[in-house]
Length: 409
Image (cartoon, rainbow, N blue to C red; front, side):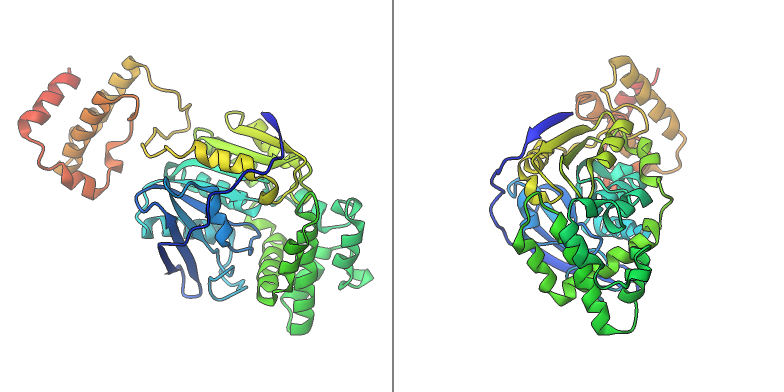
């Protein structure tokens, strides 16, 4: 754990995407994605907040474009994805599946996953579902969609105590009789048929969160609410997820942390984050002591308050191209004896394999592993792709025999 002061550190320069597109993930949804930076670089995916917030060009700037292949995705109903503000087939499980579909579509083996606020929820949920595909996690303003977190921000008695002026504007569209359950009261209006009331409530909901997101109020952030489509996307999708408890059991994200404790992770948290208070990030860190944990003083919720540590975290994970061992055990380096024993187990597991490509691929992998124990650790031979297996078909029988003589006693 560290206690860092907030400081302004330059982001990387503005860049333009070298590839943009739409990925059809269902009969309803087409998702916008883009790639920028180095085409052959270390892949990183940026998961935006909300849900419903969408990505922005500035989101590319946390990453060194000379090193990273920077991938941005507008989640279902958000940003440029279509249809805008759509709630149909829009769940956490669907979004997790979408991230994996994008990885496959872009032919990415493994990537760094960066997410803040709701983006941290989605990053954690994705990593827990597909741990073998995550090189490292960079998380900001931890949010796990627990009822206590929702009540703090959206119901009476929580953040209201700190922002009473903004709170009055937030509750204004809701009649006094319905203010005992503001999330449901908003949901009824945001999904109703009165379009004028729907837009009015969307702007009030969105303005409340924008007003509380930075340590010092930023009028430019609050001005975003004037964009009708964005306000509808942000408010409708957020409220949809929150009224459904994020489509997860209340403590699911924290209860599933053991699945990903072997993955390198940096958590960055603003001390005075009112949207996602530090308590949740601290609870995550206590369950995941291996993760780096940075409390940033004089900082709120917004990534704009946390530029320096976020850029530093991205810089730290620049060189994560080598495949590392993935399991529920510790990620420490294997001893020589453990390494050799593991290699023997790999051979024993594939020695009777019917597939010659799988066996020959395993043999080549063992040779690589033997030559560089520091960069390659025990993996399951059958996880190699068909293309990788076919590429090593040319390995000579004599070469395979020599390797077998070394490792099979």
